[in-house]
Image 1: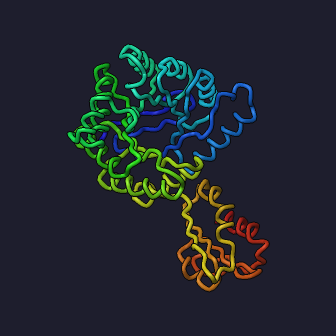
Image 2: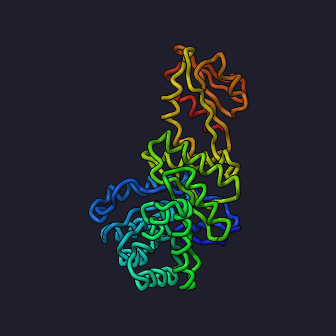
Image 3: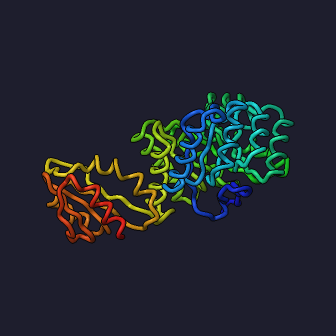
Length: 361
């Protein structure tokens, strides 16, 4: 079992514990810059609403890029107004980390290899220790030391071994400073390398591991890569927090992450959506209905299964296990519960009637 690392232990931030046998958490990263929040109240309010929506959908942690002092001030502004644990992602300038520590952030993500001298790292560590803030070490193939790159090029070690060794070296800096509240992340865009480097590390060390396939790609390809990597590692008991990195929305990253954990038996509860892929018998706009309802359903505090089926021939049969289902043909739609039709309605009223039946569950 890995050691426990607490995120968000102060202020109004919701406290999350990563590792130590606690449930695997889901993360995402904010997709736009936040330098203008000090002068854009509408944008600030929008982000806060979206953070709340992400939390309802099952997201546990959100990371923000902090490339400048304005972004540091902005993440502190957000952290003061949300219960979502926020992580400041910082490269090169340790002073940005110190600035973020003035606020209510839950953790700082740094790569000690590019943060400067050991003294700079010490300042960050001491600040995190004083404020009860965790650190995430982020390693990827672009941050390997020159000597390890040479060994990989010469065929002496694999890239996965190089990623693991880099993490060991950087973690050693924190250990020398008697700081153990850190999470390790080793990512590759290659699924096999991601699996292997995390296996190597987990065999010898007990620090919590953040799993991710970096630059995984667009929605479909990225979900496939992440599913293969995560299901393999989680099945071996490796991994304490995950992020599905997609060239898509934060909402899709969260949906994918939560779905992977559910299918791996590492998370339960919430709304489960079953929907058919459509075929030549199509009588109901399954895709449009799912698109309109998916995020709202996943954010509901209900432990139910919802079925959206394309035709009345197979709908109630294939979705008979669902607590609530809808199917249709031509200008009519049916609402069914546990396989039994309870209402037949005009298709144009599908959303309104579905909402009525949903609220009664």
